[in-house]
Length: 231
Ligand SMILES: [Zn+2]
Image 1: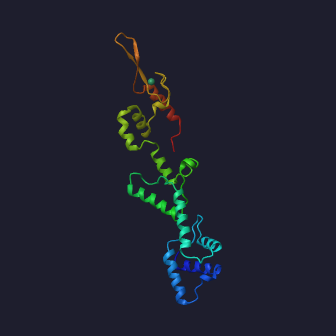
Image 2: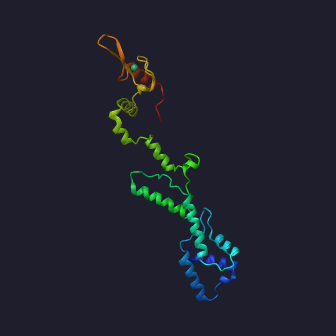
Image 3: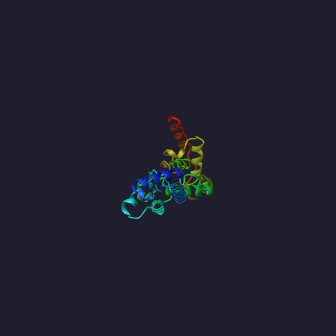
């Protein structure tokens, strides 16, 4: 509260409890300075349930003693404590690799909750799923599109060549052979093609993964040509 708000508060309190009214010029100024010094960081009201006039009225209603700044600072501190106790830090929306921005957003959110300008974020487990997710964080998740970050995906590529080839093809707009069934080796959609391994005696000795059969690539290309290009 600034000095003007403190003066308004003292006027309100004076109406409810005339004992607090200071009529002498110097006394009134000292009282204003004292209250401002002690309650400067207490807001008049917040959008979420705090109103210093309610606290003042409650004290005058229930206590025979004249109101002191402490009678307003104490309820304000417990209001802050209560909100912070109910706040579980939500995942910040900034880049997790940017340590400074990440910490700043966590601290900023806590300050806003304590100051009463934001509602506490409850743990997701006890609220309904992803409803409380920050829209900016939602955008970031959509950009990445996978729980495997792009850098880790690139590092894994040598160890899963079929998947990497498929992703490269899709990224370049080429037909994705694995999206259709292979008419040659009967591999199901999503499964890589297989070729038969022949033993020295000419008998089959199981199958091995192989590159997509040309007929399957042609089929995927034909299917892709029929579909409208993605927007
Ligand atoms: Zn095949």
